[in-house]
Amino acid sequence: MPRPGLNLEIVVAEAARLADEVGLDHLTLTALAQRFGVATPSLYKHVGGLDDLQRHIATRAVRELGDAMAAASVGRARSDALRAMADAYRDYARAHPGRYAATLHAPGAADTEHITASDALLRTVFAVLHGYDLGDDDLVDATRAIRAMLHGFVALEAAGGFGMPQDIERSYARLIDTLDTVFTAWA
Image (tube, rainbow, N blue to C red; front, top):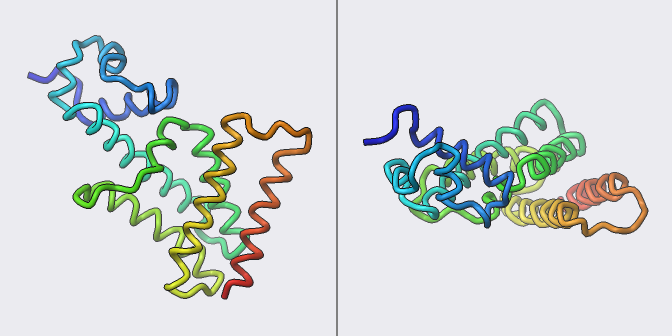
């Protein structure tokens, strides 16, 4: 019988917080069970194991990231929308490093919840890119360019990879300016 007060949503929410604290790669069912004061096998009443838990975290994280990007870019166009969306991406990665790590893997073909969350996020990116008059054939390429550049930046920033004394914010702003220039010329 599941512990009163525990359910899948509560377990995944706490696992996401723990992943942010210790890193997704260091998340264990044992550490999560300790947070709830239960034996590790008790968690199997809610999740099918660590892989299943990480899948749920990924779905949650993609949904959260997509919501943040949509909220930031709504009512904006072109460079303003691109910058707002990129800032939301960067802010999410900084605030939730464990969850962010979970967003990096594409959903499995049968994982409908994760696919639905990913599709919602993509609709936001596509809406921003449509402001640049990009055709449907260019949307995937442009989306991959945004993701690769933003992920590269936030990953290097998180790892302390920018050791030169120049202002990181200036470099980040120029990265977004570069994307804006590329997408303006792309069409």
